[in-house]
Length: 293
Image (cartoon, rainbow, N blue to C red):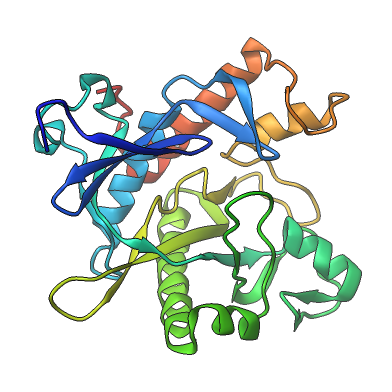
């Protein structure tokens, strides 16, 4: 890697990707925020740092459960010439070929799972007990994979469809890894007086001199990829407030907006409230004070 620094590879809705050399990448979480697949004009201060530091913490905590791509968030280990402003929001990782499957685990009946249950009494095609309410715990966590769309919305897949897409062996590994990580997340969240309702994981393949290795990539158990509820105020039959960007979605849902650009402007109180939720999630889950360095 030259002194000019890492080479920019791609921009996502809320992240930037750089080639860090030696089969490594830098993933930079920005303060951009999206909702309903639209990036807002306003940014959420410290969002990128909170998410990066929380992911790093979880990667370190779960490395003995499922292998991952994490290397470091220490700027001294970044390539020469890396922009100092990336400190705190950049993560150095091993490069992996993404597996095109969103690996979603649901422990509670909420979101699209609740919508399916109301219509058909099932979750991802699996029959559920009668009489469940919104936000009720499921009899056991359910692995509900979906496509990882390059553009547009992801689409739910049955287990058979997902296995056909990635191969039965890979599918079995993804399901096993996802459920193990979710169980760990649920147990830890409970010690923080939080309910982990659902989450999504992404995986990739690292090919080297030895056997191929499937690893967790991207982010893990963050408040952007997971739905956390306050245990004290959680009540089945309601839509519990969460620590994710639902605060932004709720505001947007109250506006006359057709969910296409440009989005309505976010008021300062929505920006501040969203920042507070990201920071609180980090501090509650890690037990550490949030810092901007």
